[in-house]
Amino acid sequence: MLVSAKEMLEKAREGKYAVGQFNINNLEWTKSVLLTAQELQSPVILGVSEGAGKYMTGFKTVSAMVKAMMEELNITVPVALHLDHGSYEGCYKCIKAGFSSIMFDGSHYSIEENIEKTKELVKIAHTMGLSLEAEVGSIGGEEDGVVGLGECADPAECKAISDLGIDFLAAGIGNIHGKYPENWPGLRFDVLEKIKEAVGDMPLVLHGGTGIPEDMIKKAISLGVAKINVNTECQLTFAAATRAYVEAGKDLQGKGFDPRKLLAPGADAIKGTVKEKMELFGSVGKA
Ligand code: 13P
Image 1: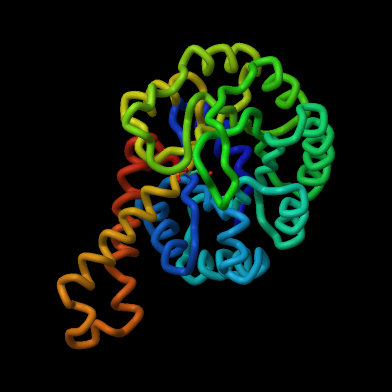
Image 2 (image 1 turned 180 degrees about the horizontal axis):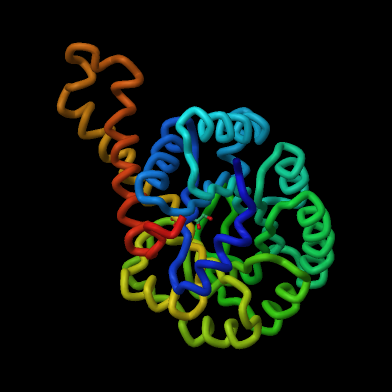
């Protein structure tokens, strides 16, 4: 059964570890993430972007697939199915489709409009038993064609949004989706500290989890980050493993052309990445 992410993230914040959000794109990725979470007895959040939802033919398909897969694989650890960077309309679609958590990314609206829409979505999400993540200050890089500027969030705006009854908050602190450029100056811990002071116990979310050095991840967790999103790193390991398999000509040997065989090295590579992150975030054994 899917659970809202509220309780798992409150426990993580209290226990000074973070729960990983791993974005899924298809059956293989979903299976790899769920099996790894179960093996490591870790809570987990499956992230679905609007683009990935569309690719999988719609949020209803995703929700049905994840629920059925959890039953067939006997997954007993806490799993939240979460809309990543949702639009206002996307949030409603996921509530209807049976997701257990949504992110409303209103960071591109004016703060007034972000507040108004977030307030409305908090009410409906909570009535339906879902958790809600809100965002202040856009996060750098590009995701599904939406380009952010990598700005840092204003602590006063963070306070205004967190007072709306949201469950966890994504606030830009110099983090970027995708690969970090060589001249990236690092996370702005001074800003994170001010945000923490302003929002108190609210669990904080760090987007752009790919490529952040381990010491910065640990410091961010110590300052209140309880959820870390990882997408690009799984894509990179999946692509590298598939490429190695094809370049070695293995797809042309025996039954290598079988799509199940062709996708197996990539799916295994994702398991490795998820394991590495769960160990780094400290969520192993916390189910
Ligand atoms: P990366 O693709 O940089 O890992 O970021 C993922 C993310 O933040 C999804 O919201």
